[in-house]
Length: 318
Image (cartoon, rainbow, N blue to C red; front, top):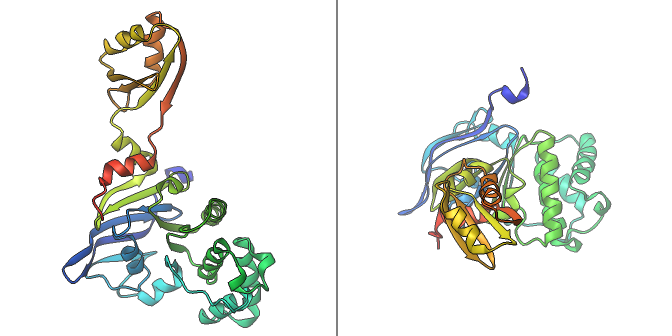
């Protein structure tokens, strides 16, 4: 049986996971499944409940109600066992600026009771993985913000966890450092890690993640494949058209067809909205060519996750 047809194995399942702070509901009955091997994007505006969720999954915060299974272990009853299989990187973590890079990682290796003889190799391996080999002897304070983030990632990899919980790992990074961080995460996924990464910057997760969840005001409003969120939101695709013949002729031809929901002129181009998600955009070319219009350009308007997110969440979180 090929891998593709094998049913996915859940790495994380939450059941009605809830967290209250006084009378404020930070997370409201979250039911979420993340499968083994997923690079899973956890998306929401600031204050939507992402950090609260990750802190609960990392055993740092007790749920007010509900439960969760992490790699077959019960979050509440087997918290110790859970800590051994996860690596949690909070959105803000302290680094000891006057420590050397290797010293810092060796210290965390000791915390995880990795034997001294094995620690040096482990530290070397994780530094290579995050691309910091040449910074081995550097003081942490001398590293750039991007390198400090990568060191933070090295720290959570030291005990070789199967599940990584990364809270906004690219926040505050310049574009190059962000791209480097994303490349490391893709490599970790290739090595078989399951990764949950939270962000409010949607465009960076759009190409990175195979599945996403969108959370708003503590409630899950979408969970599934990245493409699915687009399909669910974009009722009809948009196609942009330029013609060399009379524009009004092209508009008349298009408006006459039931497959076309709307035709408007914008910036000298014709914006055509198809009537449903299953209508092929090639129909626009057929209508125009058969009607005698000369087509110069036809391009599909990709609805990005950013646009979807704005439609889904309506900016309800302050």
